Length: 193
Image (cartoon, rainbow, N blue to C red):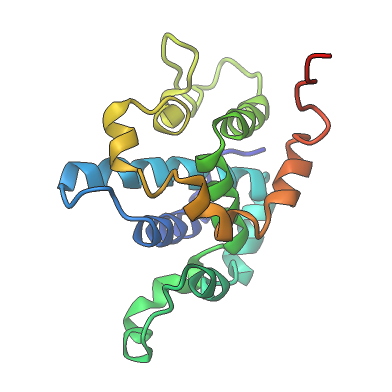
């Protein structure tokens, strides 16, 4: 996995914008809005890096385009009016699979940890280069702290964004593929006998 790529910036930005608009912050407070959007961006970033793991993958999506938000808009009931379509060209850069995977990560903390671990495992072991994944003392990558270890303010800000039932129509679209990719089905902890 190549990790961050400038090629993925439009996909990450548009997909984050879609997710943050579909599941807005729990209050009108601008800080709550920012905290909620940061959590959406972290989940979208992990999902995008999982979906497009190489520079070649990122370059191809930049050429072909990710597909747009039409199915997501329909599933979430947030289809724009015909008059608004011209001003919402960003919707063409939304990646349905990335948003679905991000919804899965936001709704399931264990799956989020698996996703981040998969991204981190792909970081080259060349220690002479600075890592794009700074770590905190608790071994949670700083870049993904709000996704993996949200504090009370983060949780209050993202009540809708992290609600499993509300996310389900979006998460279920491509959950099976994410579970397969992360080997989540076969590695579930065994129940005690």
